[in-house]
Image (cartoon, rainbow, N blue to C red; front, side):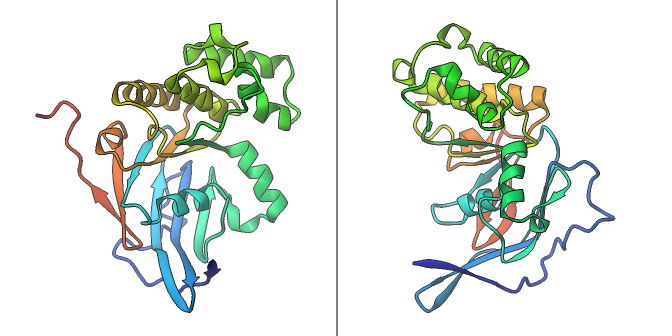
Length: 256
């Protein structure tokens, strides 16, 4: 059983991002973020003094072995979990200053989520699945329905809007999930192994679509993945190793 505990944040080579050196308008900022758990009587440090900044429309890949803390970092960035140390800002909003209700409102407004499993509601149509976040917010008005149609058109599924998920291929279902994640125009999209259930060709098409939509929407993307090929679609890649982030150098996709 894992339980959270505070952990001191030792200094790192990069240093903490301060008000003076933080880029104006950053979509995501992590300052000296730490997270640990107890496993029995032993403390396990998952993240230690993490500094990270992502600009609007920038796509960053997060690499690392299973259990390295990739999903933990995504959960912290999305306000799903709380850090033991440090500060997290999304679109300039300090998550540590929000109560639980405030974090829930923030997450609905500012964060989109895409997972390896598509998590579509099988009894709802494609359009209804994409509409769900707007319906939860009471924003499924004429403008909201137009937004749903616009996104389905952009992911190439406008003609499948009335169908149910079980009539779609895996790649099509993930495109529906991507449209749903973007329907609120979030500041940050968190993708956890989004192509893990797809074949290579389909994965490439989904990643290319994600690239295009993120740039057009101005949405920052933090994508956890095991795939170097998937990471190569991003503007830069980082590797999480023993609680620390380091820059990962990737070969261009067309390199021999």
